[in-house]
Length: 375
Image 1 (tube, rainbow, N blue to C red):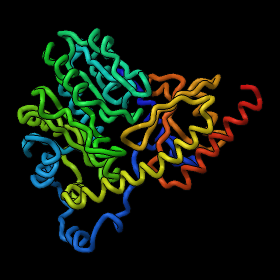
Image 2: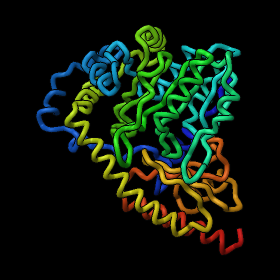
Image 3: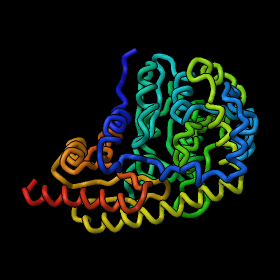
Image 4: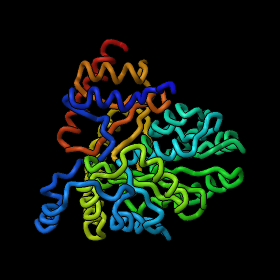
């Protein structure tokens, strides 16, 4: 198998702890245990044996996850080590050499790379900017789905744009998939991190060849637990569980218990309320900064997640912009080319507000210096 490097993940792991300001992070400020747990909840951890847990996730956790989805039961859930393992297992289980996979762009690029490594031809369709909203290029999507398509992979809410598909758009994707009998794989890891209004409509429940991937790393600010999951028909869950036996075998037993605590209705509501407050506070800083640079930036405000994709009119590639900004100003952001979107870059704004403002000020200094030198 020929490895296709995961450029964004390698860039982040190389530099995120080396720079003073990290704007490449796509999650929300992580919890500390002392603010996440009550005293009685912490006490529950003392008696847990540090052993292997349920390899598919405890019954309690799978039941709590299932409650997030209409008409789902514990048998519809497989717990994984982060949503990244979930994506890997699904792609491994479905893709054979010569298959075709249809992939939304821009997007988190894991499935894009793994599908190719397993021998699939990946065909893409784009979200495009129409009237200050990211919208699917339907003509392009319909042109790439056919009888050889194994699945359509979407991300909703979307990484890196922060855009949200409407129920009618989800239905149209599923109807297109049903036409040729392929699966829909929906990465919904940012569901619950909406700025306003109800949770994003899930793809689950309207088409029987749907699988949903999600986890606690984004909206729930519990990145270090590495708890993800797959929602799928019971027969597919049994199949994926067999593949899971060959990877990480089981989730961490302490993470399983902490995830159960996080998904209790009252605590879950508090967690997501915290997320929403951070998003509102921090995006106001980003928007104010963007307004000051409206001569060189175009953007569509995100509706979910602590990320936004910004188009620039600078005479520089996105990779060069990112590299020079890191070297000269010790600020890390994600170049758009890593999402197949040249002339864009992604900014993460889920951290503390003071460092965010300082980081944006440094980007402004970098831009001013380029303007001064006519670059």
